[in-house]
Length: 627
Image (tube, rainbow, N blue to C red; front, top):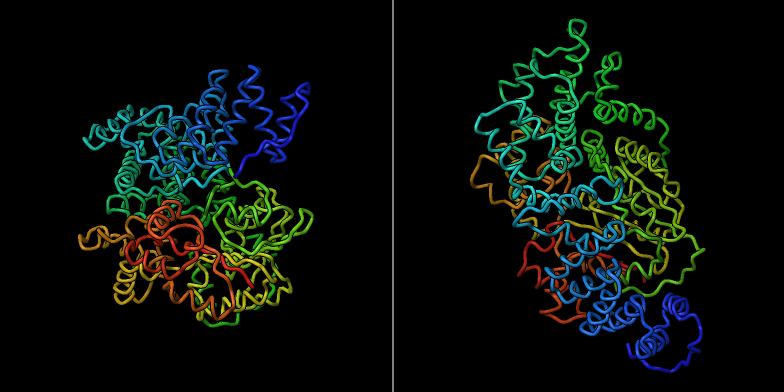
């Protein structure tokens, strides 16, 4: 950006309001002219210095920008100045300095700092070498804000933080040293971040998984000595919600099976006092779901363990009612589609809890693509023009509902084969009071029957599971407007190489895939040293039964190479607009091959992937445009 001093402004005006107005209109030359004159006349305050710093920041004159942000801080310790310095250091890749300045900003205004995408990026990525109470409080704040982030995105960072917490390490040590006592349970009840984490998402750490299972077993074995209190309730409820969030992927040993076999609460509930009964029901919910135990409604369990009751009974009853009224736009005719539908009717997933809405501000399509390094032919859309978006294969609705606040004046249609998945999506839509999303039952292969031409189609990990992915993509493009965008996610054959070897081995070994089979396969992977180095064991899908099956044992699967994807693009006369995400990988790519148009060169990306085979382990996520 070339900065020129053209405009003369009457300096008797109310400079601060003028500057703010001009800055909002992006008239940066005029802003800089006014602010530098104010500095020369010794009339600049912290806001004026901040504006000067921002303009130099936009012009990538980072050292000048930092100097003026520091001047701003010398006038007033503002959250904005700390954030701005942190942003500069982030762009300069001075990550330790950047993170520390975000912490200073957080101390001034935690809400404003948490809405900074760079700070959230750090909180997702950092692996801690020591514990900090302040950092722990930040994560607890994030997890406690409903529908702010996807909690699982922070799992690895939080686990690394807890690993270095002295008090938590001591609790685990005492527990494993068989120094079991109510004192340990009391100490654990004060570990609020750990408990909040396990009641929210599946733990993706084998060490913590072992601890949770040992704790679950201890509570079951000692159930007769447990008194109902706020402390015991807090621990049992968290473990129950954790086990439920994994879809009960954990194995149960013989001692536990023996106790559970005798725990026929329906027959003996009349012989138990209310507290004892409720504890037993809660412990049972740590091993099996309660939604088929209709007799529980006759007890006062829902008043005592309300979180468990709502999650495992009320929500399922609600979804059953919703399922009866889901609208169909097509019949499921395709043979493969019927097989896939049955898979998701049996194993619907994910049963997510929160959306990531922290940085989803209404924007137009061009702005969104610019922010995500996507090179599209500009789309002419006014704010009042409605954007029609299709989520093809929406599952339980997480992506569709997150997209609801992405763009100005959008109307979103989510389609899926599974009514169970759609029932979950519609329940969450009602809970969140989202009105611009509609869910319909039908087959992606029948998309033209919707009779809607879409501006955007989002298809995440769906074409992997249809009989002919090329035909599926071709059908989707028939419902896409000219210059419309398709966001696709597809499995990488290279990134999934070792997962594919596991898949082949176990599908040859087992002819039936049910709950018991999945648990057996998981145990075999954990107990076989040859399997322990497989990338699958480090994936989030390894820690949830339905996701485990979907990633490793799906009845229909295709994987792709970039060469195959490029052929699809050429055949369908589409334009490749770039990959989404991959912030670190893109920086590495740019350092090797250059910037700008090279990011669209799939042949270079093929070379990059061959040298960095795990780049697309989380799938190819990319954007195409109809031309």
